[in-house]
Length: 180
Image 1 (tube, helix red, strand yellow):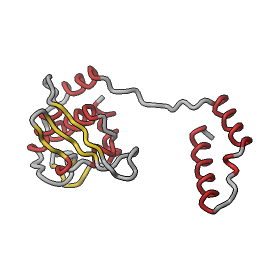
Image 2: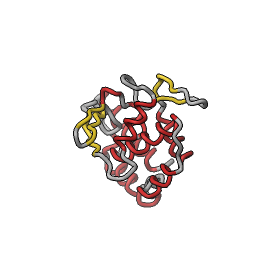
Image 3: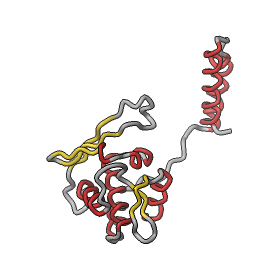
Image 4: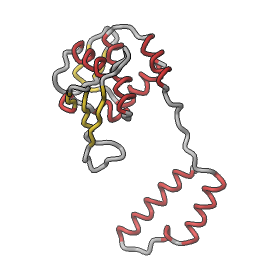
């Protein structure tokens, strides 16, 4: 098994023992030393996808057209890049989560992977100084789709019809992969 899998399973065992009031074997020196040795021999580096760099993003945006799907994808990529949002956070955005201010936008992320309690956070997105302004791209997408309430990033079918249904988070990775 991978080191991350072993660590996750040990955490589950530890939680279970603590919840039932048993002596926790995961905290023993033998288990800790064993895991330390496994980490040392197998390594703990996670495989990560290569980041999308600014220049590459601009090249991708230049290749896009002006169909509804293109406008959605431009807004999706630019907002995601400018706010450093996860794909689940992007597709969860609703019109009520966007606040227009003089200098750009304030995006309210209600819940994320690192915020399980749902306290939320606010992210400022300034107006862009290039032709690839995330604020303008989002406004153009919302105007194209006549989006005034509900989810911002919606499904677009093959003939350009914009649905009222929110995109799935898996669709964001497909958009990125296809566009790049």
